[in-house]
Image (cartoon, rainbow, N blue to C red; front, side, top):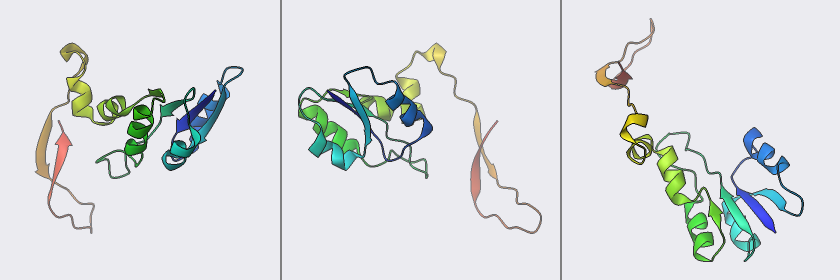
Length: 126
């Protein structure tokens, strides 16, 4: 059996996950595009896609995770989980109301360091 950690980078967490592979289970970090050619029936995938640096979405690879699941490959941390954990409002909605506290926010003017100009408005936490 092959358990593929579907990720774009060898982060410390991903490498530690590989170290925990039980006997008889081959585990490796595989980029999403390669996963479609590598995984077959009897294998499994662990979705480890990260938030984009722009914090407005998830890294490329969601299509590949959906395709693996459609082909019968068990996908842990699948699309629903990734979207719920990366989107804080969706994460909150899928949790119990008591477990989720959203800090107050307010729209204000940005303050620049001396000698620097800032244009526009910013969202701040109160």
